[in-house]
Amino acid sequence: MDFWPEFLASSWGREFVAGGFGGMAGVISGYPLDTLRIRQQHSNTGSAYSILRRIAKTEGPLALYRGMCAPLASVTFQNAMVFQIYAVMSRAFDSSINSMDPPSYKGVAIGGVGTGALQSLLLCPVELVKIRLQLQTIEHLREGPMSVAKNIWRREGLRGIYRGLTITMLRDAPAHGFYFWTYEYMREQLHPGCRKNGQESLNTMLISGGLAGVASWVCCYPLDVVKTRLQAQSQSRSDNPPPKYNGIIDCFRKSVREEGYGVLWRGLGTAVTRAFVVNGAIFAAYEIALRCLFNNGNHENIQTEENTL
Image (tube, rainbow, N blue to C red):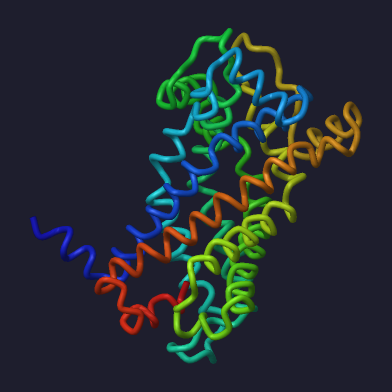
């Protein structure tokens, strides 16, 4: 009975819960756009609007949320890990920085790169299951996330569960560097001094978080297209046909040869729109949750903790 009071009394506990709220807000707000992005990347089936109309007509609006349980179930731990690792790593490269001051922009960028690489270990299996579910259509048997995960494990083993890990790391490491750097830089530009006093407005949180999301996607989008195509294909140990792509370079070459360089940016508009909405929601929910958890929003008590994030 004393677990939750003791858990929330610790810095880790408060960051864990706040990160969970932020992650859930991001998933719920942006998942329909993510489904459109995945379908655009996987095959040339028209614009986002035409795909949206076709899904709504043939599969129903709820198809836009197919596969959401997998990322939603893992989002609390994932976001807690991301923000906590970032808080540690952003200061690890700035030993001269006072503990009461926010990390330098250099520390923010390097810490973000390290965070992105490490969190890929958790994110890769989740995104693999999510992509397989999002690409299901009304004509095919619908499976839940656990069923999809079990089938992948049975047919492809551990290697199948972590299909796309290398490309996920190559995508997420630089993307998280741009992500955290853009957020810290933009919030300071929109509300000077907020990195120290933690008193930025809701609009600053939403705009800074949204722009951070856009920057992180633009810098890595071609890698995300390749990742989607690699993870969308299955490889059975027995009677399934061989996969179309035999690795990152092969996927890149075949995609460009068959569909042109434009394929590497297909769905970017949908991804950028989603990124602004989702990451604005993530940072706003995260910051607001911290204010609620730290003595009912007393900024003076949360100032030191927020400066590490």
